[in-house]
Image (cartoon, rainbow, N blue to C red; front, side):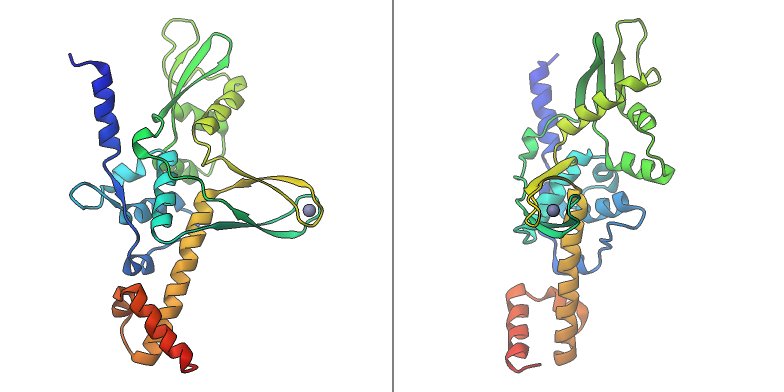
Amino acid sequence: MPPLVANRRLAKAAAAELAVVPLASQTLLGLDLDPDRPGRAGRVTTLLRCGLRDPDGREPPWRRVHRASLKQRLQWLLALCRRTGLGQLSLRCRCPHCAAELELAMALPADQDQADAAPATVDCEPAPGVRLRLRLPTGEDQSRWASRNSTDAAAMARDLVIAVDAGGPGAEGGDRLDPAWLSAIGESLEAADPLTALELHSGCPDCGAALALPVDLERLLLQWLGSRQSGLLFDVHRLASAYHWGEREIAALDPRRRAFYLGCLEREGR
Ligand SMILES: [Zn+2]
């Protein structure tokens, strides 16, 4: 039997084999990026597939991306946006103390090395002598929970428990979850995936209060891609109106040439 360490390395290599590529303009035009309509997890899977390539340069299977952990999916989405030109994000919100409308700049979290990504399981000790092993939630879990339209934390935790060791015999599976363990389970999952449970710490420029604002990073990234898409559609409209080229042709133009033609129209006041 080969040593366990070698097996772990092989597993890591398998997990790391997808490369992130920038989104082509033609692809961006065709994507549904609305973060608010039901079915967001499926739309993110579709988007991620467009920006991921296996070693043969092909898009990975839908199931592989959908069943990846939310942690991995968010890292892919962040890397994809970076490669597509994202430099900085800003968060629009209302100060909970003085109700001022704020737009806060947010530093981008560092790209994680996929090969060093934490394993997709997390161990937690929700009570003395009780040990749980959980798997990190996936896009598939997110879809299922959204379709149930339930925020029942106990049911969600049951889906994620792989093993319970409460000191007694036969304590396997997630049916014996004590509701008192739920907050510890939530904390362990957050600690294992800080990007999914991100908080922005800042001060309100109006009233000076210290702010700790929850950030839905996936939503912000989808909104950023959506604004790129709107900008591109507007460019298509301007160029199509002036030159009568088709949408596909305009989207396929090298971005520098597209910018050149737009600059020409600008100079002519069109
Ligand atoms: Zn304030």
